[in-house]
Image (tube, rainbow, N blue to C red):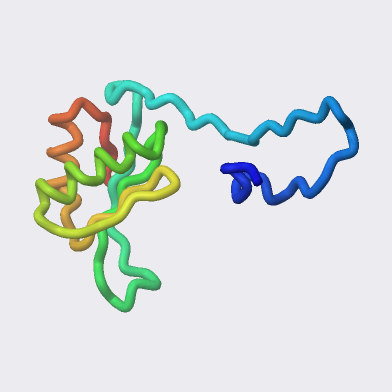
Length: 112
């Protein structure tokens, strides 16, 4: 049995003797330089049981770079949060603080 069986569950069997299974590894986007990114910072409390969070949207790049930026923001603000699909969620209302941190890192920031 192949080591990457879980990765190729869609292919069951092939009668072609020349069949070579290739994984559908979708390449992540290259991370743009901070000066080329226009991030949007906004506060939101909808569907969050009344708790306010700070959202950072429009990040273009790899998920590892997104996680690194989220970790930096969470550390500087001293709160929790998460990062996925080009969006960072910081617990609490830290719009101005997040804007200052991102601008020091070289990002273009717009507050909504």
